[in-house]
Image (cartoon, rainbow, N blue to C red; front, top):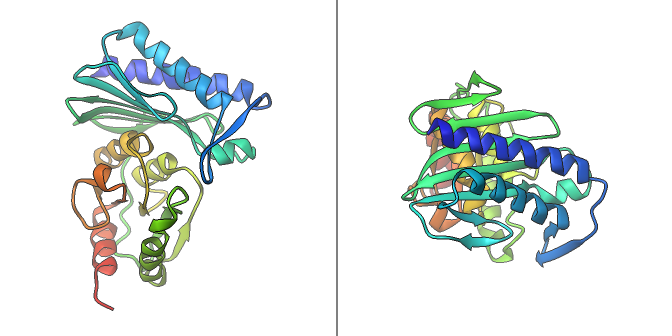
Length: 257
């Protein structure tokens, strides 16, 4: 698995260098759906990542946010070339490259790279997680009273807004504060390294969460869908937090009014 991680890091760093160079040369911005954008830089960065990985693993398959599914293999790379495209377009330095490799559906390695801050978050299944080669652990904040939570608006689906607001109204009075920074991949990485105590969101896709979830789990955190079940990818909703905050979040969310 170390070889897979080495290639993932190489691809993330190459894409990061490319994106930083091209940040002032965005030639096209398209709307994929309401409030969901893609630029020529996203598309080119994803192809660069795929080409870098394919050079070492030509037989592997890919699931990219911009290019979709390609190939058939027990090994699948799940890629988001710029998680936080709106921030990137607006020159807000909070976006990341997310790369994960799955074997028969189970994530083996995960990389979240923030080129703006040059922070590299990595994880290998069963071997822990690191930030710039230093071991990561989730926070030790107990419960919600002193916890800092992160979230993201369900901007791709207005139908989920009512559910989102209902959960927000339950959690917010119980926590210290809430942040909405605009990159699910970085929110998960920040949970893994203890900057946030927990994260929750509706309407996510596998490329938003694949790498970040492994970071959280390998740092001692817990992950589920909004109902506490393990099928967060199928449901598109997610809770990720340190164990104490995780249990407290689920309890508050599902308590009777």
